[in-house]
Length: 343
Image (cartoon, rainbow, N blue to C red; front, side, top):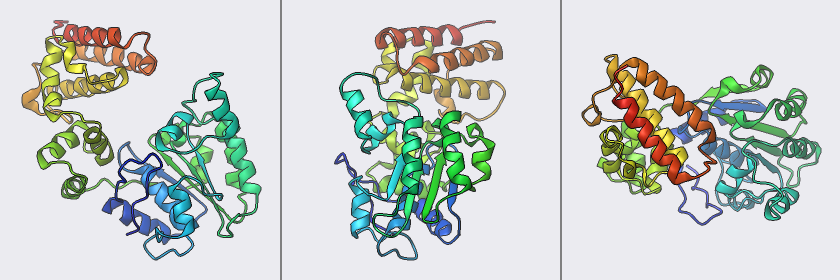
């Protein structure tokens, strides 16, 4: 297994999970110029995509992947590899430590615009031009697109021609959490790989290796719907497993303090999970995100369905609330009304 990459922001690196290493080895043994990694969020599409490009560009690759110590691996670790083009929404690039193009960074620094939440067509055009250039290090080039569903139709069409007739030394890996949103022509030109859902024991062992206590790991995995990357993100964000278990009945009381450590987007996500579990409980199915003992008595299917639709509308603006505090209060009141509705 190759060493875990050093993060550009100085955060503790996350070792490559064993199920990611197994998928990496399988994919590297196959031929293809374009891969599409697909599956639900939290299963490691981005780590696997990064592992693939590290191996493709490595100066001394092994059968299992990149060596982790050569100049090429170091250049990727510090986000400065001349033969790697990363296409992401600008918000995500900043979060993961990837540098923005000079003009984009200047526009954001000068407050001319905010970082984009989708993959911009200008960035895609730069990527197409990158594909036409000669490899700087002589080992070919790689383009990593994540999350690929954040390409709009104009951006996707700009990529399509290059995917159809790729230069001989460039390889692509597209990673997505919503493959159905991609153009069929994009999907058809890639070799598809569905992400493996890890076994419970493997996820618990991996989380323990990141310093997550066993009881907390169980709670975070439940809160994340069994998705290990999302569970680790909850643990590293300092979320409390006890607060998660108290959330359902707190919402039945309309207690907004239960959402105090959440952003509006996180609060909407948590309430959507609660709504899902109450609907499941109402029809006799097992809850997914909460323990059944922590759930309040569910209202009828009608109120829960209306609440779910309202939360879906709230999710569209949750990243940019007019007033975060007022939005959390409104969400708590909305939850209480839904949970006590008779019709």
